[in-house]
Image (cartoon, rainbow, N blue to C red):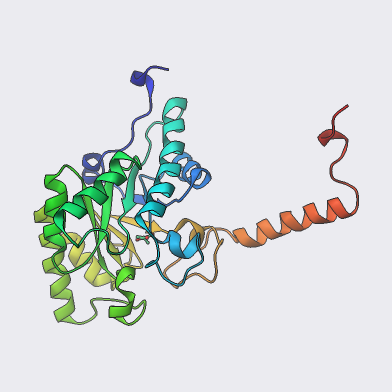
Length: 280
Ligand code: KIV
């Protein structure tokens, strides 16, 4: 099929235009099957999050996730989107964003551009996400000036778990709230096309959302954000106990265990493989 007939991905510009029009639906995905599910179901944005450290690698935090691992998972998701693009059956494919892992973007501007650039050139992502660090606006400016679209991440930033003293709600006092307001304005001015707000009180999320013209994507930040994001495995009940801000739409692990248990029983009872799964 010629490229003229390929389904296009949503662009960062297209995502920005959704602010104020309709809620933006985002999910993480880390591999080919999860990307197919997310794209076919119609999410507007897929994030290959460094949460893969938790839900795929089974770590307690995200700090051990490397750029190479993040790139590998991004290529798996990209491949699924490319196949769907060729299939042409969907109206629009999601925007693909890669999460820059711990210590991959704030050593030198050149390293930030090189690492983020690999996510686009090798991984197939259209943008990167940066968790807040002091000076995040200057990293954002450096990357956007190099042609790499940036999504910011404010509030709870899991890469700073040891500085924050745990996974707790951020921005509760007025001083912290003012800091976040100033940071989101600086991110917008530096060229970020969207900002994730993680674990902030809902009233503050509403103030942050009203303060900028770029979309806010909430996780544990209440209903006033322009969009929502969840971790794929949390939504489907595939991991350990999910945090309070998660709504589980499936008890996936239980269903998988039942299916695997049925397979084991069939094998032990000589019911699998049956005639239909055997050859003459
Ligand atoms: O790593 C991740 O999956 C994230 C989302 C939870 C926003 O940062």
